[in-house]
Length: 128
Image 1 (spheres, helix red, strand yellow):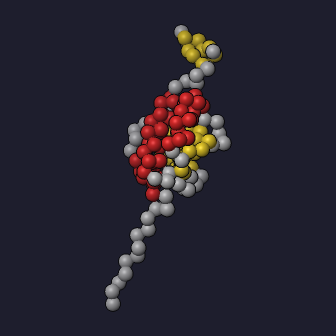
Image 2: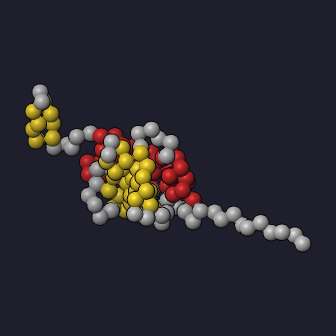
Image 3: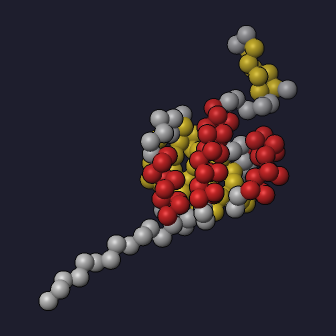
């Protein structure tokens, strides 16, 4: 009698799984489990969330979205999230995966900068 080995199941959302695996090695990001998924933070700010459904929610910030939205909408499976400054990327193919990884770098930098309306000069904060 030949014994069958159980079939190895592929992840339901392989590109999301690849993104999570890749981002775990980024020194600027800290992973954590949250609700039904995984969240990555940089300096205690949420940068990207994975909900287990093959999508990533990415906090690009409002100024970055204002500059890049036209290009992003044409090049990735992207939609606006309900929270200001956040987008949802459907990870349907390797192009979406590579775009997400590149955009996470942008999001880390954008979230590390002070908001555009505030500047600090000689220890004084002004809004402009």
